Image (cartoon, rainbow, N blue to C red):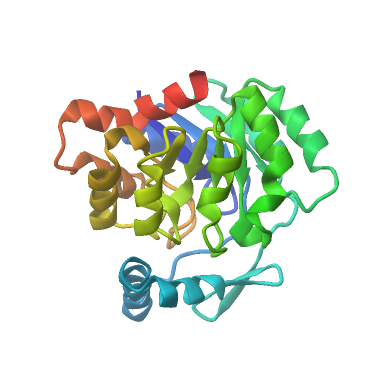
Length: 287
């Protein structure tokens, strides 16, 4: 079974019907949904912007002090700033739209409960949604919501007690990837986008922590980076995801095949690819 562990629902960019059609075309059995994080944002595919993206990836990998400064500058005062454009970040996650989709298509979709610990009703809402068996864990975004990883203590404690995984898009906060595994050693953690923005240092750390994983989602990555992270961590530490619909250039035309190709072309045996494409994630949410 192939499961995409990381996909946002935003019908202003990609309809549910188109999602299902594309999932079927690419052999994706289930998708774990996350509420929209920001205003609809279509990818600028001009050569200049593609080259800027390549430079950013190079700096994160090879000159992280510079890369981190660039990364940190992308979010400020509730806006995501990229290529001269600003996109409003949603402080309040819309988990209801995820729940509605799970109810409509329970055999195709799972849900992450998106949280913002800076909001007063976070814990009550978390408990409510986790009582729905369609929700399999928690999505946290210290980067977009601009908070310290320590603000997730209560959320992490609930997840550890309930055995639910957390998927986290890290900010540039120094050594933040160490905090939750060391304070909550039984917590199941997934660092999104191969552990952006730390990458190599995070991979070294994750290798020795049995409950910590990465996903291979997002246009922040490419096939070379995915190959590097799988070689570094091994196939049992990596989970397939897309991070769609972000990365689209036009409405309702998301290319599902691109992220899946990163896994399909890995120089590893087919049975190991099966773990990345679904078996690892299903073990994580079922055990």
